[in-house]
Image (tube, rainbow, N blue to C red; front, side):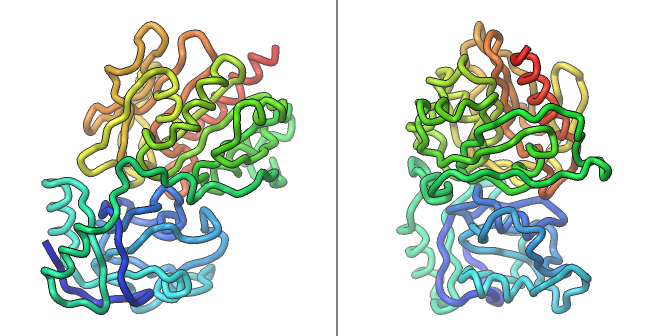
Length: 362
């Protein structure tokens, strides 16, 4: 299948797995989410770019999507916080975009046949050649994309959090935390600060011994891109640390914990991408609307039932969205609780992690 539209952003070719995101807003956070490494994103909402781009809303130091596909690029920007247009941002970042295509038709095709490799080109107009180029492009299955997005060296992330704004509680004891960066978003780090943690961010290849040498009170495993089965070194690190540190994982971190406990991962047909996915907390029976960005899941039946208790389930397709260890202080969720972009329904998970560490500290 091919579409003809109008290019924007950078010129040339862009390759990647084509996925769709159902968010109505938050295109800048989506563009700068490292979990989209290797993918081109189709926005289902038709009008994109109307509030521009600003530095405060970035979720990392640069955009990571391979290409951007929308119905209509807003010809004007109307927002007092805007610092540049979406078109200028993609040009500066050397990312190609296309507008003016029937995104509803494209999304329906992806839902029917599944996520597929694609190409955007401002130079080649022959559909047969473009299809051939897309077929020859690299697959993300079996590829370690984490090594391309993780930080190169450790650093501390400790923002001042004024409790009078309700973002944090200055009365809380501050615990130290190591956060493994597999493609971590900045608002996740802010949330950890706001909930009582001093955070040291370390690269994904950091060993268990190096993490323990930091003497943290807990371990956080971040989101990240690609096939979790390809990140074997991090799975091994997590396996060595289970039972030694309280642990909280999200998205790819959830998949790392699942594999470390003997579980298997598999690829979804078209993934979960958006900020409106309903998830049930099986303990409270409450339903939260969540922000998600993943193509792979931990298979429920592959986890050892005597060690693991399922805690959350996706109400759209009944896939596993969270579990905890029955013996050790370890829990995880498949989604992004930091709400950037997305609702605040899942903020309680950071409080739950704090309380878990507080309990372990006696």
